[in-house]
Length: 234
Ligand SMILES: *Cc1c(COP(=O)(O)O)cnc(C)c1O
Picture 1 (tube, rainbow, N blue to C red):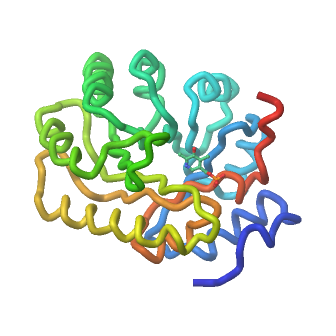
Picture 2 (picture 1 turned 90 degrees about the vertical axis):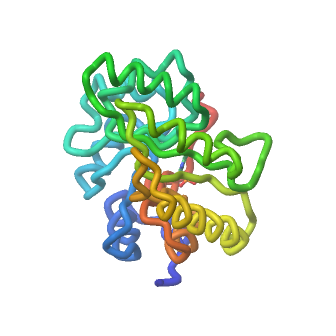
């Protein structure tokens, strides 16, 4: 792994940052640009610069940019907290919903996908740091969720996603990433129907190198590509 860090790269253009990140990632690791709070124009710039997957957090924001054809030429995924009543707006538009955090949500996605006659790929989000402020299944709830998934005809579980606790140095998250990798392998070995452990989505701007070294094969990077988000505009 190269040791170059993104915060040392803040004078680079979006294209340069994407290029740098890509050279750091092994071939089996997919890069998702976390596009929240970035305009359709900036999303397009990222796609022109080599981004193949965009991940959005909010349904409304996604639909607005979708209406402006912001994601043309890339795959679109959903990575944020998803309410059941919003499911119908995104099923069929996104190739993967990374943030499935309850059985009720899984059922709702199944219903919506069935109605459309499609199969929706999802990841189960794991609350690996057991944080009250975070969504996701607790590790001891995963088995029930995976068993529940066995009967769903229009949802396919493709792997796991996690957002570990905020940390001051990236290495602090290594134990969480390693626990996730272990879970991923254990679940794969148990061979649940309708679940294939293909995607292990973990690692963001501050810690993607650690995540990858612990076995992540999908990183979600926002500020490392687009620069800091301006929350004052919200
Ligand atoms: C915003 C976001 C990211 C990217 O965060 P950065 O620290 O800006 O790279 C990744 N995953 C999820 C779920 C996010 O909401």
